[in-house]
Image 1: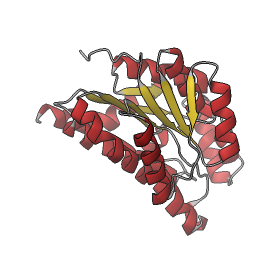
Image 2 (image 1 turned 60 degrees about the vertical axis):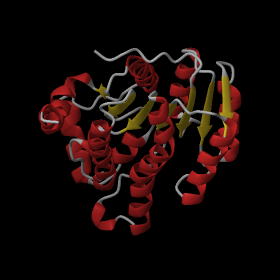
Image 3 (image 1 turned 60 degrees about the horizontal axis):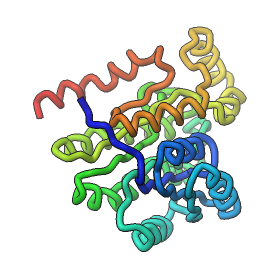
Length: 266
């Protein structure tokens, strides 16, 4: 059984923390006793405004910047290192969504989505992890997706990046097995943020697949507030996964089965 990870007095960083699930996670972390939560987002005014609003729950500090660039990642990591002796929690929430048929998808979009959704979380984790290992304490959250375990038309690139997160975590979790640094992966289906509306407006092929899933009630739209609550609770309890909808747990379990089997041999 995993040890409880008390959030009281912790310092956290939430990427993409100015809106949506990210902002809700920030609120939850502060309400559970984190001493400070840093948020970053590309738009400075939006990031600053969100930090000001979230400060009603505790100390929330804005560090706006474009973390899709190496300079942006180094700036963010450097500023936190100057301000804090430690970073206890890293929430890799920032991501880009796509809903374009791959045959006509812009090459620049492919590269940008792959970098923001997969490379950036790995690089930020690389900055945060040495300190966590040295203290033998810390927690990292990654946001994957149902699309990372099941292919959806119009989401080939997005799904590939989210599957990449799952496989990265599989290997990293084994490396951290002897430490008290833990990982939680949030894997939701469609979230009530407008992305699914865009997908439904696409080609007839995409619409037909979406309608079939909806008739089977396999892709109900998730509530970002509830997802955030479950994610914060999972961090505190050191739970490895938050999956939604729960009715697709079998799909997640089967996808993760080879890793579970391999873990018995390591």
